[in-house]
Image (cartoon, rainbow, N blue to C red; front, side, top):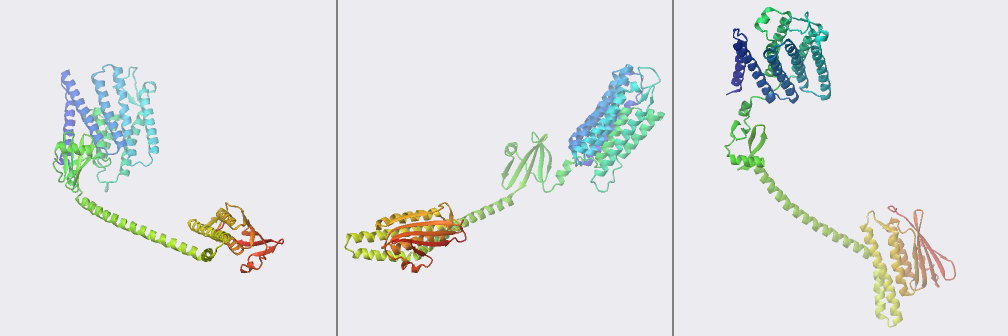
Length: 555
């Protein structure tokens, strides 16, 4: 059955129910039992209609807060009819009827306020501001309700000419009653204006639907206040008329789309061509379906529920629980599986290529490392070519000598030159291993210490002093200080008795000071190095100084 047919049938049932209730009201038999039975049937019809309407609102209104307000309105209508039934069929004393009459005004005042609140909640942007406004509306409604219940004290709502207990058969209207009617009219009018302004429906052609019952309610209210006779005859039951017309106002808003509902499930499923799905109850009985959703066994459905999804032959069947049952839908993922397989093959190919590139990179890194090592070795060999040649001469002399004393003397020279070669290599490697081409004064101190220790084999007393051992300097300056020490040792190895080598840092320069004890005149030996300043301090004591300027990079 299509949605239009279902809607027509529903409104047909409602119309028949209203006519049946109206027929029950027109029963004028003298039999009290039949008259009460007809009235009870009428009350049950209306109560059933409004209970069904509350269920309809809870299931179909989309906006959560609006749904709560409309559901509360339906419950107030049920309460109104319940109070009416109690008034006419349970309480027969004037006081009880009087209290029930005042209770009418709780739903009468709150229903328009809740309708206005439902409209304000739609599309709200500032929730706190909206809630503050609704609290103000409810506060005004509460004041009006309290004024009704305290009417016997001030009689500003209803005025009575007789003494208590007051009756609703003899009264007139006060100023607060007019305020209440105006308040109801303002709330209902404001509700529709807000709904129309917030509506996103193009054209807005059916917005007259909720206006018609509103006009009818206003006309009935005016006729009731004026106590026109035909109003009493045709529509004399205030509860039935007010509830029916107010419900028609809200239902009209739903029909023309001012209040959105989620209905027409079957048509939605049937028209969703790209979706193969079905909705079942808890026993897997199908209620709605679309497309070519396959037939599934209960066992397979339970497996899908446990795993959330099952894949079979390129079709993935998914599941989510919904209120009252299950939603199953299928997806054709065969194309995705093919793409996934292509991606896996490409991934494997890229992995293999990455391994080859990694191996090639490792080979290249090893080659570069070897080239760098060879370059360093060649550089060290070029820088120490003179020492290597000197070692070769010492080895030749060592082979030719026959004196044990001369043999030990030459061997000591070889140790001195070899120590320099070792420490020179260490300094160069440390230089290229460090960041910024730097060496510390401690590296120079260790090199001088080992070289001075080797000079003991040549019976030369050697000492040294290095200032600020923790300071980092440019590596070229450190190497120049050590090379200067080695040059002096190699030149004066045969003629000096002692040497004291001092390296100090003054401002931005390294200062080398050398004190040598030798019987020979050293000025002739220093002609090769004009930067070395020679000065004789005593008969056999010589003082040599040199300034090594710090280069960029030192700190």
